Length: 148
Image 1 (cartoon, rainbow, N blue to C red):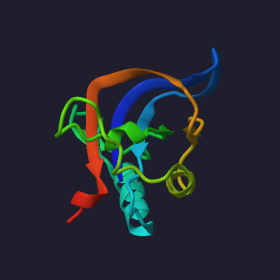
Image 2 (image 1 turned 45 degrees about the vertical axis):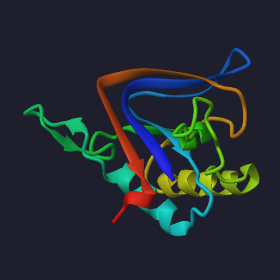
Image 3 (image 1 turned 45 degrees about the horizontal axis):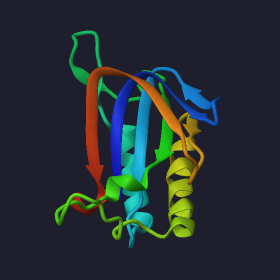
């Protein structure tokens, strides 16, 4: 499982020209589910997202988590994070999980984060326009296959 986590001042998802969801200060998480991902991958990603200390404290150091600042989280599915371009220029998505199973895993991540945070989402499998104001910018890449 891969996640691109961005510290944002705000983020939104539009579908067919209408705002589907939005958040204020917090984290925008673009999430790609790999074939073979399990509950262990879900638990790792949820724990990492919740615990990332990438918000500044009063001394300007990145010591605070999204929970510490009472921030919000938006999770948007993005299978293209699994694109492999090692051979040629057209991405292969063979590492991405089949959509029905991937949606179930995606929802498990969202549910795990909902235990402690206000969480907004995109619409799994829909064509979305994601807007954000990246704060910093601060962007972190998480990969559950590199957890040890």
